[in-house]
Image 1 (cartoon, rainbow, N blue to C red):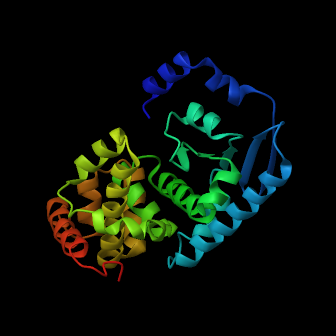
Image 2 (cartoon, rainbow, N blue to C red):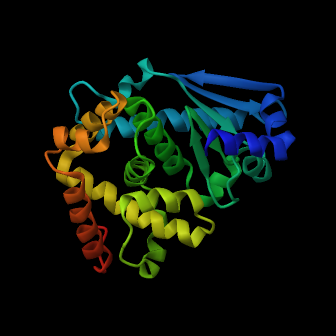
Length: 263
């Protein structure tokens, strides 16, 4: 959300800011901080903290880099988790709908209540998703395109398995990368979100199969050095942006037209 939109949201709903300004408690471990209202149970916060540490360890297993290990995130900016007391509070603070599990903004993960995440069976996948956003933001210094961050987060979170029953309704992608960012901004329904998630999942899969996680990390670092995506793509992936995007669209269409497209 843009800064101006966030300020407008705060003006429209003063209790949004009040919710975060209220007296809170916090617990921390391994550069992860969980904040929660004094009215909430510390037991729930400790469960979230343990799950977040475990989720980051799971992401570390994916890493094959010599110098950019996920476990070295402990030396980077701490990630903060705001544990909402209710879904209503989550929606007020984030401006997002009830069906969304979490939101990541500038080093802070806003979570639905633990009870909600348990009921959906999405606690671990949600935390992996948002921690991947943190990793992308740290490497790129906040300069990664949103579609790239979302593609990596969806691909590595494991959450796509929760959406498999909806796969028959997914249509082959016709979206270009710039259109993905616009669609992410204005996604209004859960059905629209599912459509985007499948497309972004295959984008993450395509990029890692063709360029490896190491080359993706190098590209993100270059973005953090103020290089354009086109410049970073030529340098680390050896191809022009238009060519990579064209090949991805063909890949996604083939996958989505295949019955067993998770292989």
